[in-house]
Image (cartoon, rainbow, N blue to C red):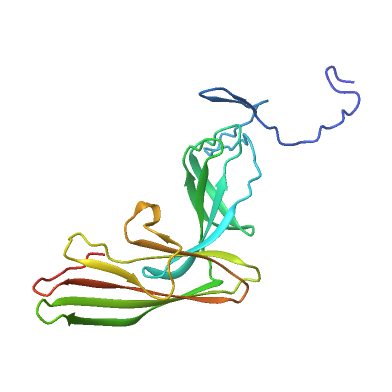
Length: 232
């Protein structure tokens, strides 16, 4: 035998992922990656897995039909306790299909964050102005009115129930002489969403093949001798 050669075959070790040891302290987290990684001299980046986590996202379909009649799927995740999530880009997959990229900010343990997963073609949204009317009221001291009514329909074509949130808005008066009144058959679930005045939300859960209608509008009243200007 040649000197230094092996006289018998050594059993091969099974390859597997090596997870980093994470030491969480009061104001920092230290990641200690075990072993070495070979980086080929090809100019390409080498990825090393630091950690993994199983998250249970809360799904919701959101639509703003005044701007776009497409519905969009969002997933809200709550970070696991223990270690913060570092900021950076993320790849997004829906049912195993790559749908795009996003970015995560630095998230503390237990903090929530929402990611968008593109359009949901199985939720159909329609938007229409049902009524538009202007007029005057009063004899001696006349005032002008502007009334508009909208109708939004949302239909679920999924084979399972899906939570849906529909957003819209009504004007907000910046003058005491101008009065704005919310009208319609379908009161919103929330008003002034995220502390944005005039923004309305209707939250609902649609059963498979179920369709719901939202009917709402506003009435604006102001002195007859003045003009108003809308600024949406």
